[in-house]
Image (cartoon, rainbow, N blue to C red; front, side, top):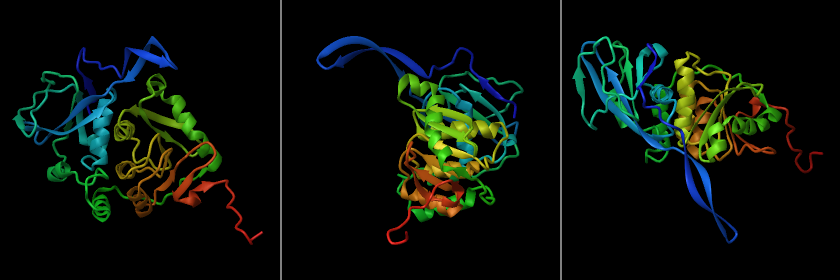
Length: 314
């Protein structure tokens, strides 16, 4: 791909300093606080023949500004629209806004001609990339609150997920315990605002390979996987994805599409997330805290703990 282009003068800040009133006991005083910025991002898709591009808005998500190109690439990759970084011809952050429910067909000149606007990212696919727009627009399997039953969601994943290989990823329990603190220390924006989700990618030795933050859990994962995808490092076999919140169906779906071998979360997994883990053999850990965690699938991939002795077995 040609690379990610950014609009001149449209750099969006991820945090905002404000004045507040702080109450301690019954004492009121002026203070300063730092907030995580939340703004909408419109993702546009350009596709079709080089001399007759179709440009269509396909999604609007609330996100923390920054890494917008990676977010868009991660979204398209985890939704099965693109499977290789070469499927993407270019990404432009701050592209021309296209009215909802409309399409525009235009000749594509050799230089990027659009009137750049804030909070819009345009991804142009290579002319030979074919995808099912109806499936993308329906997008019925990307959220666990959509009302579609679990069976239908799993069947949808089976039709779009990349080929799976044998899961050989193993990690020690003692290493697992250290990961939430390592992720937290790497979350610079969270440490300033206290209001962001984090997603971290680790190897089996607990080395932090990459981290992304966002107000949205799914956006943080899209940014993380999208950056790895654009760097041609997917599928992410033999890696662990750590989530700072809970593990939902949509986050397991994104891990699956990225080729991740293990998902760990500091919060609870949903029932459908556990089904995805079992169906596609993704090791899944929840409630990961400094002294304990739950294994929902893949206990053989976690080493160094002793099974409890049941009463009467001693």
